[in-house]
Image (cartoon, rainbow, N blue to C red; front, side, top):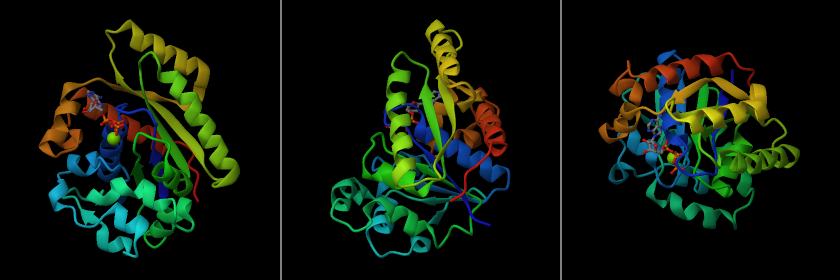
Length: 258
Ligand SMILES: Nc1ncnc2c1ncn2[C@@H]1O[C@H](COP(=O)(O)OP(=O)(O)OP(=O)(O)O)[C@@H](O)[C@H]1O
Ligand SMILES: [Mg+2]
């Protein structure tokens, strides 16, 4: 068996990538799937959201992607059964520049993950809000992409650029890459705009858009300051319930394996 790898990406900032990665990873672990969360964003929000604060992070994604560190040395347990984390190390912010001069710079993460691929059922990669070399590394490593899309006016514009990039990568660097789905996030049912955008996106991209919609929910936004996934902070809130539904839905989708 080899892990199913999912990159959670959107070059637009603040659309719910990290929140989705943390809560989806936790829900998969709750379904007894051995899950590794890779924090590939120099902001390190996924690491902080799981209680790994910058001062506690010695080695992590940076050393694994750029150095000779074996990934097994950098992965940490999270206190949540079946969920492991490869934290973002503080140096990761320099990686975009340093990678430029490296051999095989688009494949560094892929090579690093190869040794642990058979151990996990799922590997989720939280990407930074840019289409730079770090995101490129995620998209050569993953077979599948999940795109969180915030229900707001400009949502579709950025999306077409992202889809074009994914198509280009499929033609050149990773022929296995597929869009697993687009998930609507921070949906506000009282807002006409949210409903309008959701309708437009469904009309344009039909079955690529997942049925599960993540509502805007204050408990979800409070959870990271407690160092916990929303699922552990308040399992009964609407946001947590939506993420459990999302995990169940994506488990039934057709996955591409590398
Ligand atoms: N369903 C939700 N309900 C309420 N707040 C949310 C929800 N999802 C995300 N947020 C909040 O929105 C903000 C942005 O979310 P998040 O950090 O997940 O986005 P991101 O795409 O990872 O951002 P970045 O591009 O900076 O990495 C955060 O403050 C988060 O707590
Ligand atoms: Mg983020």
